[in-house]
Length: 123
Image 1 (tube, one colour):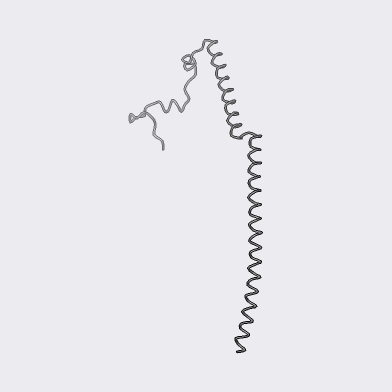
Image 2 (cartoon, helix red, strand yellow):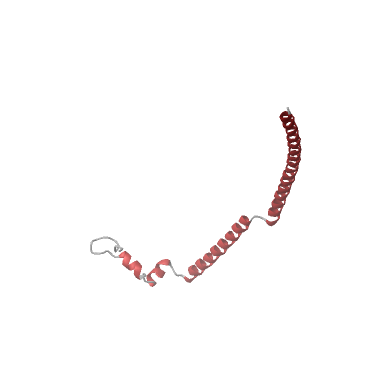
């Protein structure tokens, strides 16, 4: 009978210890839930701030596109000026082509080789 009494006392002690551990775990779970809630609120606030900053700054993509369009406009204006200058001078593409000789590579690629092919073969 002494063995059963000792076992009963030990079981009661272990049950009390288990209850204390479960209470501590429950308390910690509550703290974790509170912290998770705080983290979620912080993330939502940070997202709102990021959105507001991007609204105020403007999109980098938009700025990049605008810069590209401005550079294309400059290039087209320059081309137009060059065309107007050429037209005013009376030069034509045909007269310019006659004045400029073909590059050596163009001459080589234009000639026929001995087998009748249009271009020289590459090695």
